[in-house]
Length: 86
Length: 334
Image 1: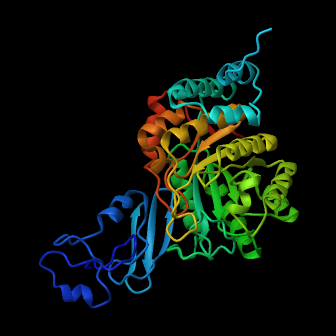
Image 2: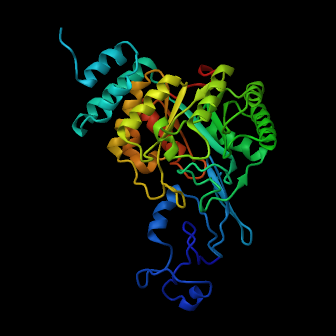
């Protein structure tokens, strides 16, 4: 599964180095980020320790998220479920 | 006769020696103490906790039974259906609820709180709670608490009948600040539910969130109002500004202010279970968590919260071991 959307803020990610910009533009506006940065937003990545994913990495849809004491699950209606912990 | 005016000297005599909580005016004095007296304050709050509550720490896990889609407009909450929050509605099934209770008990916790984002429970939610509580009681050795919003007397009676031993309903903030936080119901409505819970014999769990734009005077007012309620437990949260909510732009509470608040609430509520709850990770970090445990706190929520993640439960358990604070045993709470 390619990561095209930030799982924390839901924005489309700019293409990683070597990735076609047209791929990233296909579904909407590209977030302005440092040249060649690619990959996830650093600020959002920093929040991942205390935040479950909210948006599907493939399509950017809001996911149904269930947090439990020792884990979480997040379900996209198109791309299925991901989970962490027990 | 010499009149003592230093608030910590007053607290030492009144709270530590006699077990009488500070008045609202004195709590405000504590909240205004300069940073260079913070260590002294925390040490006194810790002494008060040890004297009147003992060294044990009550450990709890929480889970969201019904997430999101709430009709209320609590401005701090990502589960309100009135805000453009990324949190979507979800229900937890009974087997998953039992598993969550198992995960909690495995940490050594004695308390498990079932929470729903609602104004108050409807028939469907009460049925789910009834089934969930029965299933947990059959499978897991743990005390069960609930937090289901505002209740009717019949719902209070039913929760007692099915074995819920504690009910959480936070006043959230000072009465004078409440309308700036919630407009869809009143502080008084919350108070009415708390009174019914108290009269039913269930333990009352009532706290709030620090950092929602309240003044120091209102923090002191809130502590005094909680003291007037005399709850069994007070969970202290620190605002974690959630995307899409009206309070998203608010700043985090400074670590020193959070610690001062913990100690001030301990001096207002010397005998109450004072619980570290949401927001402590981003407000205080690991070092602050330790300082809080040595500054008046005697209970923690371990593991994840309702919609956000906490630090791993093992980290808190290890911290308690290191501080030589025993986890309260189940038989001590029944």
